[in-house]
Structures are given as structure tokens and as C-alpha cells.
Image (cartoon, rainbow, N blue to C red):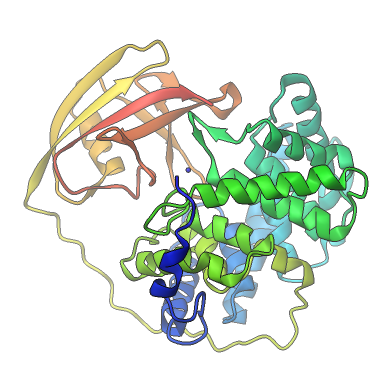
Length: 425
């Protein structure tokens, strides 16, 4: 989600590495407007990651950001309240909510949740969630959720001015040492990036005096892992992990010329509309503006720009393609049993639309999805679940390559075979 960066490409890629204020200003404005416009078409709960990116940007529409903040405090807050009341682990969402509020300079002590008739503030609940995660790691050698969410929790506490205890941050350090940041069989660039930002914040806060050498060793290894995941085209991991990876490199003190190839890769993706998913834009835009989530710690919300205006746009009418392409879908269950289906779908259909067509043919294929901030993901296929609580997920691949986009974003442009596999992680 590997080669070392090719230094000789840096000068060729850009005369002024990471320069986003000059010639790339228009591109950044377009991304910023696309992210702001996504608030108008947002389905489901308001997205704290989108809010965080809007607040980190150099350009603002303060009225729309304030409106979205209110939605977070009402709708997302209620959803988290329900999860906490049902004793569910929501450390990642709670952490992102914390960062979103902090980015708007909102008083975190005034945000409370009531569980078992006890009314406690947001940061107290986040600390409790982190303790549960830490205890689960001690017993089961892995978090209740995953190391990405655990690292996000450490980052949110640190940025909010809470002293992170050594035994909490040590769990990340040990996971880095033993290379536990995996998603399936592959190393998770996203997790290394989030862990890097979390540990850098802990280091900057000076709260890890004992074990400082181990902390620095972990940070150095994280940086090495991120750089080793860089492809020859500049992407780190894949197109959708590069933004967080660059954020982490900048947060960990990399010189700007180290990220030149990755910056140019993200700009090329933005120009070709690769980042049409708001979640992808929300992780990429801060990196392109040479910022990271650590920037939130010192944000004061004073004298902010308020010039970002959305021009009216004509509605886009999508006409169905008259060209069909052949699609083969293979489902491999946890037992290894396989079922293969074939159908023709309109060229340009999303994978989700294709699966809906297949389901409608009544040939024995069924599926259900659950929502996430990245969009829907498969949770039930042919009656078999793949749940986070069971450390399983539905892995999607085409032509032996894992899909980097979700079911609603991946487009069927040519005849191919999609394999849906129930995997553990």
C-alpha cells in the first residue's frame, strides 16, 4: 500500500523542487476547490480528513468550513457516541475527529461523550481507547484495530498537547523494529507514514527522554522504509499512499529536494484526475503545500485567507457507453474454494456497478458493502464475511496486481479478470 530514490532524476524533474507557490498555484487551487465542492455532494457522515485538509490549506472559504465543522460536531459526533456506547473500538475515527477540531482551533475540552452515565471529554475517551489498544497489543501482539489507527491516536494526543506515555509510543517503536506494518503480504506505506508522523511529534514534544535512542532508531528505519518504497515514477507505495508518505518525510525533516520526484508524480496524478476521491485529495493536498498533519499543532487560525470561491458548474450528464467489455469475476473464499462468473459490462463501469450487474443475473453471486471514508468496501461475498474484527478483508486484484482503488472508484475500461479473495492480515 522498491527502489531507493533516484537522486539523478531530481534536477530533471523540477528546477525548483517542491515549489507549489508559483507555477503550480493554479493546480493547487483546483484541488482545493474540488475538495471544497465535495462537501456539497458528500454522502453519509461528514469526513474529518477532508476538513483537516481544508483547514491546513493556504486558501479558505471560511463560511463553508464553519458549516462543515458544525456537521462534524453534530452528525459525526453522534455516530462516535453510538460506537462508544456500544463498546466499539473507534480510535482512528476519534483521532481524526480530534485533529479536525484542533485544525479549527476548537476547544477540545468542551467536546464530551457520555458512556455508562459518565460524561468525559474527547481526549479522555481517546486516551482510554489507546489504553485498550495498548493492552490488546501486549496480550495478542497486535492492536484491536491496526497500527495505522494506533499511530493516528498517538499523533492526535501529541498534537493536542497530551503527554504520550512511553509505554504507549513504545508499542509503535517495537512494531517498527519487528516490521509488523503489513497489509496482507505487503508492507503498508500508509502505516509507516502515520507512525513516522506520530513518533516525530513525540520526539519534538520531548516526552520520550528515556529511550530516546530507540525512538531515533525507529524514525530512521521508518524513513528508510518509505524511501525504499519509492518507485521509479516517483510514487511511494502507490498513487494513493504517496501523499501521506511525503507528509511523513517532510515532518521527519527531509530536505525539500528529497521529495521532488514524488511531488511531480502527485502533480501529474492531479492533472489527470487520478485524485477524484475526496479522501485521496485530503491526504495529497497538504503534501503538495509542503505541510503535514504536524502543522496542526501550531495552527492559530488568525488572519486566514478567505478568498476561495466556487464558481457555478454545469451538471455533468453521463451517457452509458454503447461498448461492452468482457469481465470475469473469480471469488476465492477463506477455505480456498473458488467460483468463477463471466459477464459483459459497459466500458467505463465502476467495479461496484459491474458487481451489481452480476448480482442481478441471479447466478449465485451475492455481495454486501459497508461504508468508509474512502467509499464502500466489500464486507460480505457469497455469504462469507471478511471483518476487521476477524483480521480478514476482501482483497481485489486484476491481472495479478492488487487494485489501488476501491470498488466505486476502479473503472472497467478493458476486458479483464477480477479476483476477489478472502485474506487475513
